[in-house]
Image 1 (cartoon, one colour):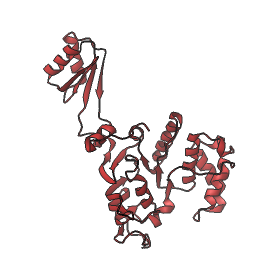
Image 2 (cartoon, rainbow, N blue to C red):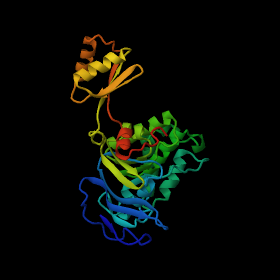
Image 3 (tube, rainbow, N blue to C red):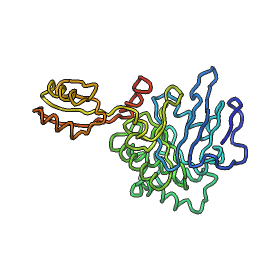
Image 4 (cartoon, rainbow, N blue to C red):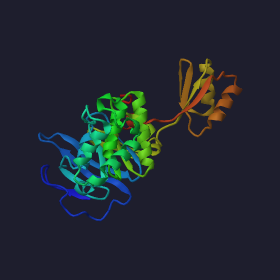
Length: 328
């Protein structure tokens, strides 16, 4: 793990690669801090652990420190203080095993997908020139763009452009893929394309680190997540564990709201909340089917009954008392 004790501007990653003390973690940070000139703290004592093989969602509102953290992990920005490692190595030694998409793709509009990737590959000093054609073709196939390989970039859809950017990060074997807002600005179809691609890449054994401000999207895509707020980490863990401490509720749709509320109270459900055409309550240890049977047994007309589990938005609001953009 790289130790950082000097102010920003000093060289980093010059030491020999240490033994992998991170175990099964792809990214580890301890007290990682970035303070800009003027005193602004963009990232404040970040302690992060990203398991290998995970699809890890890095969540937070715009301006919460996500991109600054990614830039530090990639060696593009020098941290002020703290310790960090990527794949058990300082960033400078790990970079050949890391693919990244930061702040959107940039390609030549008049060149084809293949021609663009060949130029990206030619700029990589670690790439073997004799295998460039095969590796580019393989990367395009992996992201589902083989049929559009000869098409000019300016004619690509937004989803295709994002997939081409990911292909550029995959022209060489990668153990870790870092994506900064990969679905930003995409329509629903493009978002689905990128989501599916991320899952396929992870299934092949690559750890994927996805920064996003879209909670609902990360909830569908990721196995683990961390939540940032104003530069600080407020929670991290598996998607399931993040919401495990929150209450699961039951929602009953019925024209008999008053009677339904009475029955739920009699059953011992707490925090019963009647509304127009529905009643919700904390489910606790009650079985949903038993609740439904009791309602019907008391003559309540049940139009629908659903178990409402906490979402990542609920987790964030519960931790911070604030919401942020969950739909983009």
